Image 1: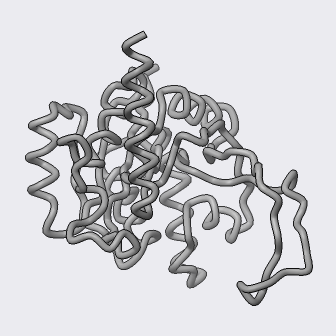
Image 2 (image 1 turned 180 degrees about the horizontal axis):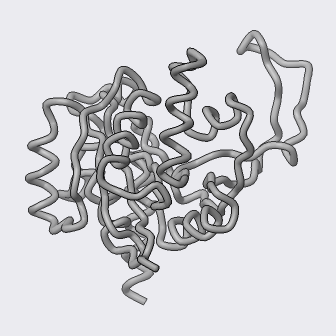
Length: 240
């Protein structure tokens, strides 16, 4: 039997309005390297990832291509245009992969702005997908959770043991995720927050793989500070 492929699909279709910077946050340079390159390197360096595709903001395809060559991201095979929102961008990406790969190949959908994704996180995501059919990277909820309608006050707690905080990657068989997006269009679900929410909204079960507090999503300027601190931490681990 032929070997099944594992493909990283990085979602970099956003303009990053929450960051308030001039350029999209996936292209912000940290220590002379764009954020998206750190993320690409995690997939490039993983032995079980066979190919990478990126859903990229229009106008930035060439920039991405140049950076990928400069930093030797040889597994990057496809750059696809973003959609009208996150769901649209993911749909564009998985539909493109369906043209080039088999139905039983696995796609790991990952936020381009989660550059600290580790080899262990990617491996566990692949393992659970092979075992259960999909995998959503999650971490436990450490904080006390309050329910609030008003956003200013609360009279209700929510049991944190019943909550998981989702991250990415979120992995699926190509056939399954493409069918899911076709079904979503049929049912008029067009702006789901993530692949895991789309699954649940369409009545499907999702399975958990192991994430990390370090797998930070770079949404605000504070997140960039955390990322820089994690990078220095990583360096000092190498020094030891």
